[in-house]
Image (cartoon, rainbow, N blue to C red; front, side):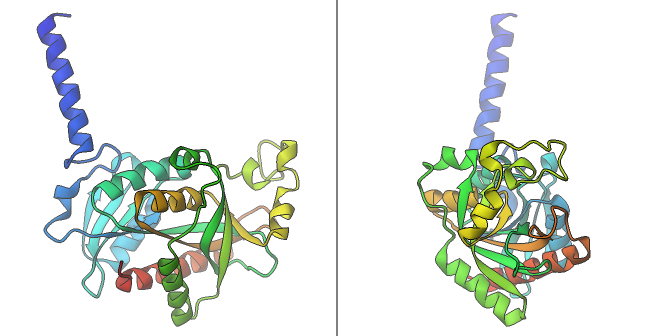
Length: 279
């Protein structure tokens, strides 16, 4: 390779990196500050499922536009009925993907993130179709350990959490507020063996659901712990509302008859809270 070709390639790589990390489009989310217009949003609704992010945007947002559908991390911008600009974005499944998206969202100016997820209840009294609003997480996630130490508390923004609770009350949605077990894996980490390709769990995971139940932990999910730690470290308000789609005291599988109801309840709560929450 000639020296001229080498320097040309190096210059191209450096310019691409600078574009990714300054005010141009970010590599993963596929958009930057310049794409957000004169009145950029400061709040984002974050869904693991790109179809949920799309549905929220197309159903509830006015003046909706697609920002990016890069790498399956779909992001949309629009306006709520009260005129507040907002993003509906996709985190992908699990904490590592979420950590990348959240980092880049903060860099484009987002100051409030409400996760809208799905979850499995581990308490008898929390039924499929209801929602769980997490005020903290037992955080068993490798990604979170790169944000802050293991002992660093994974807690939601208290004011945002109260607003989510008030929204659930106003809407008449059955809700539960408490601590969530936020873990890295869907099968082994949530003590699934009957529905898993791997029926042999490590000893430290055998009986862990009952152990968590006795600690008054409400549910399993896979992102909130890292989101909460990032909120505290980065300085944005983080909240989480999840629709209950599995009742783990009865079975390992999803209760499909209640899935749509549970997700719609979580979306309604998040939208009402987002329309009025102020930092």
